[in-house]
Image (cartoon, chains in turn cyan, green):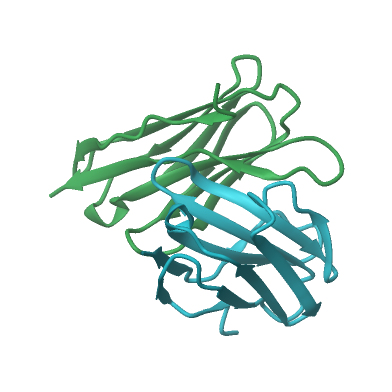
Length: 113
Length: 112
């Protein structure tokens, strides 16, 4: 299995632009998580999907952030408009059933100038 | 108070020594505890999980849990330079969906 696949690996954009991050979970995994990692705050959960349905989005910082999971094999995290404080590494992770083990993707390094 | 606290380090140990990494958490209802390892520029990977008080051993790794003290630790015996990484403590609450809360990690440096 290829693991959790994220794209792009790196994204550099200017403040105010729309950014879309993409994730393909491991086949058969029914839970998907979006995390953001910064030096100051560590890994923070943004949103969690179970069977393509958003279960907890309390970590989404504000309305500029939105996430979708149209099917079991694809999810997007969108930031519109982007701001410099959104600069971070964004990880997608998936897991199977109630198994506690999370499998992380390689992450997207986002830089908003 | 942060929900999961770790000393950021770096913790420096010589090759072959025991590395001791510590973590405290604030939610007394927490029931599941995890250690993830993250190499620089890479994604976190799970190395240990522990659910009950006491010790759990897996190869060179031992996780220790003390719920009364709200304390979790990870011991790495016979540390190797390849163990140099950031170690993230993660804690999960009780029943139903409880989000996994991560600490900011402790950076471990093992010198040859």
